[in-house]
Image 1 (tube, rainbow, N blue to C red):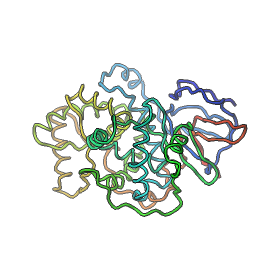
Image 2: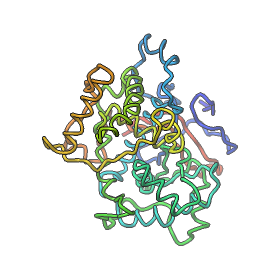
Image 3: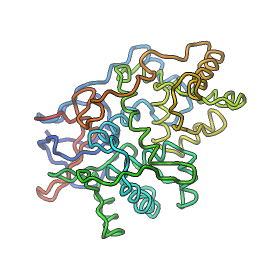
Image 4: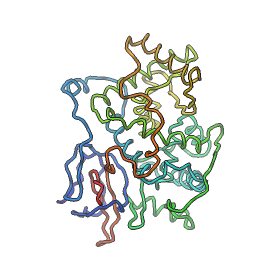
Length: 381
């Protein structure tokens, strides 16, 4: 069955070689994530899509277009892409272990300068270890923007977001060859892919100004667990999350007036992460339009003990929300789930026993052609 590049999949058309049909994929295939509709049909006998996505209610269908929430990003679709990205990063073991000193060196000394020296329109897709660090760095927008202004010619955006390239023993993958070739030309002595099977010295800290990227990456490692509850697969729940996230932004000025720290629910936090990571420039413009200023994201508050800063701030956020919107802030299925179980620490952990891949890109030697397959890859064998 021939696959087609259709704009409904959310994938930009390319001028590369034609797609090859009937590719057999196994867990040894290299994978990357791209934007795609979640309810697509299976591409062939070896690709299947298990619809983890719940159909929206008629109420949601009839009202979603009328809600003017001021967000210029399709947060529901992008949130699905973010979750798939996190699941693949986890399955590769990248987010499970603390970042290595080598990965941090590759990110700061090679990747960011490479992006900075390249055209903004070029799709430069990172390898897993760099993709993860870039993800975590951009989740601290004020720190990231400050770093870019000091060390780069512009604020560096991921184009496209939620995408990575991976390499296994059997295959290497490239959605486009540009990043690998550009890397090789610029850094001929440096490998584009880091061998993830070889132990590397962990970095206990990596301070950039007053921001520690290594510690942030360790904190972000469990976010996937928190947003993997059943309700995060529900369309109505995600649409509600967008509106509640907008309301969260709107009370920014009120919280600032009271010197209060806003603490999001995980339902809101998923949309907050998605908004920042999709495009920081759009995020800043949207926040300015909605609340008159950028809402910074600080994940350094982790002490959940009673009476601690996080607990006190969460109680204050609940009270402010109730006073402003006359509704409860706590939402069933969208709150802190507790620390992840031991099984989560294994790369094989998967809430649905399927390895998500919004797009699978495989560089094939056959006839020198490259392939991009759209769908969700069923675990085989």
